[in-house]
Every structure is written in C-alpha cells, then in structure tokens.
Amino acid sequence: MKIHSIKLETPTLNQVVDFYHSMLGIDVALVEAGTAHFQIGQSWLIFTENPDFKGQYHFAINIPCNQIREGMAWLERCGVELIANEKGETRIDFPNWNAEATYFYDPVGNIVELIARRDLRNESERSFSKESLYEICEIGIVTPDVSAWNTRAAESWGVLPFDKQKPAADFAALGSDSGLFIVVTEGRKWFLTDMQASRCPIEVKFENEAAEVFDLKEM
View 1 (cartoon, rainbow, N blue to C red):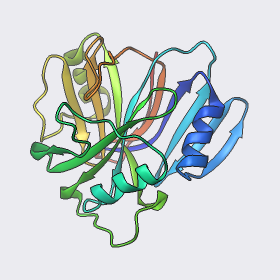
View 2 (tube, rainbow, N blue to C red):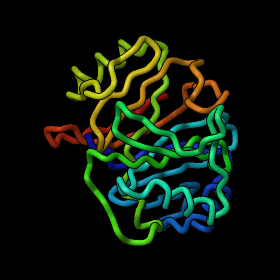
View 3 (cartoon, rainbow, N blue to C red):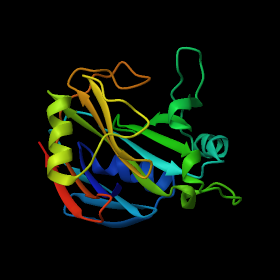
View 4 (tube, rainbow, N blue to C red):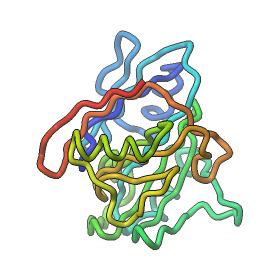
C-alpha cells in the first residue's frame, strides 16, 4: 500500500506551520483558507484549522533503513524532544517488523514516528535532512471495532493484514512496509504514551497493491 496524502485537523495552523516548516524545514506548498500542505517525499501531510478541534493523531514516516540514529540526531538538532520508553530508550527496536523507530510529539500533541525498515533496502549515504523523509507510511485509524474495520478494508479496498503482524482484537496493521493503516480501538493507549486513542476526522488518499487509488474519509 502507498499513502498519497493524509488530511488532519488542528486547532492552530500557525503552530504546525512553525514546527514542520520553520523547525524541520519541510516544504510547505500551500497555506490558504485555513489549510497547509507539506510535502514529505512522495506524499502530502495536510492540516486544516478547526479552533474547536480536540484530539490527536498518529502517523509515521519512512526514512533510510540505515539511518535511524542519524534521524534521531537530526530531530534533536532541530530542537525536538524524543519520547522515551520505560527504560529511557528513544530508539525502539521492532524485531518482528525488522525495523527501528523513534517517536516525538508535534506542538499540537500528534504522535509522529520516524521508522527505518530494513526490508525496504532503501539505504542512503547522504547526510540526514528533510530529504531523508521518504514518505508517510502509517496513519492511525481509531474505531470501536477493529475486526469490522479490517473486513471493510479487505472487501472495499483490497488492503489485507500486514504479514509481519497478526491482528488482535484491539490492534491491527493493514498494508505493507510502504504504507500501513494502524487500526486501534477507542481508548487504547498509543504506544509509548498515556494518551488514549480517540476518533478524529481524517481523510486519506491511498493506493492498494493493484495500483487502485481510493479516498477514505473517517469522522
């Protein structure tokens, strides 16, 4: 699966523009009518302002598979504080996924992840920069019924469970290393945080393995 774009709500657009563009240096292609478009590799991160919005999202970005430490150092140089686990570690190993990741909050509380997936074999010898952010590769989907959402994804879009993660009642990963829906139940805590997942408006443009493109809108 490939994620072409995700559209999220934010209570304050200026804060996300200052963070993603001014701090991280990510190109902002358009800011108008309460909406900002950031280009992240082959995908788009879109924020639309809603002053009444209360909630958080989770999404992840693929980076070179050999540069998790370089990615962490880049974030820290940009002034970003990384989220640690109970052992104080900020570099998280996922042996079943053959990947390593690091997590941080953006200024409006969204949980953002940089993940280096060895099976993508997308090594780079260049210095880590915004150009090392290859694509949005995960988006969190919150639902009252994970199993029912999984069935919908398979029947409507041909998106199947990730072959490295067996679905559970409260968590499932659907798709591939290039793009995943991270499907969780309402109230489940997001990884590394005490933040309970809640349903938020979201729009996702994505492509399945048959190169069919779909628009998903969750409220």
